[in-house]
Image 1 (cartoon, rainbow, N blue to C red):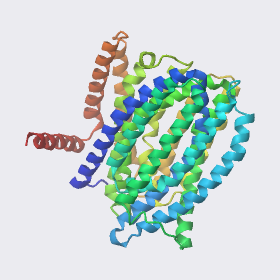
Image 2: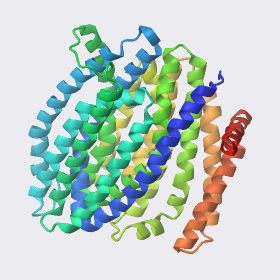
Image 3: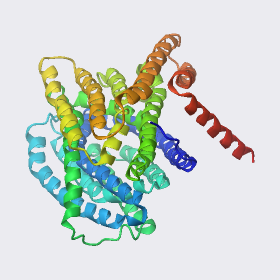
Image 4: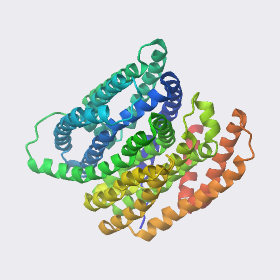
Length: 514
């Protein structure tokens, strides 16, 4: 069922992934350092307050993310049509939809959102004014992001990953500057932090806008699209995807609010740190999938089904392996790493980090499946069924906390539901494409399960042999990485994939020698 992927596709994927990885290494280092400084500057309560309020607004920002995926899918389909595609029409249709949606959501924020913040949320005494400043800055940043998301979708669709690398690096450096400024101000650092982050968001979106105008002037040329069918088609597609986003909102950020209601902002601080670690660990995987998604959609749109399936299989396996290599040493040495990284350790942060990493390993297996489902355009079943499953996370999380289970029990709920969702997506995909269930289970799920069990078993035995010191941590990370690579090479890759990797390294070495 697989088809050989062309050399040019592999080179473009490798180049884009490398650029994003280089960006990620630098950004991740700066991000982890700034998190430490921000937690130290704000304290646990203010840090938790920012995370729960920012998370409340971020709940609805996932709607914007949904529209980016939708817009990117339509752009990739048009690009797959070559000269028969009308990319500018898709772009302007997206601009119109984003503009209307952004103002509707801002109206919702300024009514229901303000009421919920000031009457229901568990905010420390005397911090309500700062909380409202954080809320308003988050809303403004959200509005800008939604309006500029079609420009981001254009950059991704054309696989211009170098732009993301430079802009993300600038973003990280600006946030590093914010850390320094916080030490210089005495009055309400939480409010100042929110205002400065809004300024960074404004600058980032201006740069994305200017970049697209310079490099894609014809595609991003603004005009009024009068074709009602274009709006209906794109909106209906986004509408079903929107249902999936609502489920993700309730599963992720809704749980954050439930934790706030039952446990307070200190636990929100712990979850914020855990999410930060997961984001840092998954950046490499996200960058890999960002480079891969356009190819999956374009090959499907061009009718190259076998090639698209091959990309899905490879994307799922390699995403899991990348996440496993990064997550394993963090998982087994999380307590020491957190104490080395942070001056303050909120309660439950260690168990939150470990469970979040396991959750990240599970979710990466779903991303390629979701990508090809979006490529088919037949997303109704996925939106309703998967959305229905993930919506259960919020009431189940509320129930376990109401029954006085510990805060980390919500992660157990999320992990169980997401494992069920993977197999459900497979059945949905089988019903709308020719991808066989047995192929994915054998080529992806079985191989990653075997690799995971062997890597975790060996790493557990190795980890207990090392004392807690920076030197031994460095040695353990190196050994863990070697163990993971050897196991992946022997048990995770097929002979054809090993041959391809050897040839890629050989070509790179030969090029360097020349």
